[in-house]
Image (cartoon, rainbow, N blue to C red; front, side):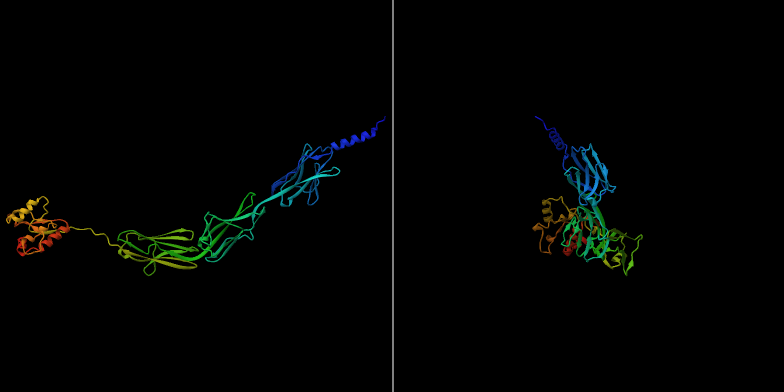
Length: 423
């Protein structure tokens, strides 16, 4: 029996051909790269043998590389391989136009291929036009701020104040930020004035921003906390006004017929600036009688002027109390040592005038108070004069209330008793 060797040879060649056909070892991973960077796509081929690998641009059907050779004239395209198994397509200095599908192809019959996608991301950028520039507006008008940003993916725009302060809204609320490329302010006021940042971000570094200055013009306004101020002579006094204006105002103090008060040994005007606010102070050293009267704080700018008045009035200096001395012939004192028995003894004894002092009786004692001014028993002042001391006199100093009481008591004594005090 003869063997058909030719048939066996053909079958062997066919089996060998089938086992040596190259195939892709794995899928091509999609790649994301930023503009200006390098992107690399990898194509893994097993059992390549004598076959060749080529890279193509799908959308334009452009052959970029075959095996280790670069076919395109684009100098940014390159190709490398690792042991003829992994073939790398290099795209240097990536541009947005490089975004798209790329094909790895094996020249088998029929041809084998697979594709991968190159995503090109672009950091955000803010366009000079139509983005708003610094603005100057009148208070009460409507304002629109715009921020035009580009990038891939499309950036989001956020508005914030440069100093981190909250942004006042028309409803009276305040928010830390406003989202969107257009920022509308209805009836702008001085609280909106300041620097704003238009911030664009899309997740691709770096984030960018633009500074826009919003300037609000308004005429001067003045607030005075105390319009009536008192001071004593010789005291140092400071008058204060608060002014707001923009453009910045000229501020000064006047008095009388409008004479401007200048810096000197008597007066010290001070201005404390804070943006569009001015704190005006006028210090008067050692207030004199001529300093009492009206003062005016004046604020002027190109949009108008205004003033506020403060009246400085005199506060009397506190007076010190002085003691009053009453001099009488007899010596009168409050006897705190006498006992109740002594009191009754003196009252009943007609010769009791020999005692050394007079005594103020207790007004609460009903027995010592009487409505009859004719008798000696009515007296609030009781006692006698020592015979040997009638020619001498002594002064008594005590509290004002007690002395007034003595004066009143002596005034109501019967004439025969008052004669004793006159001796």
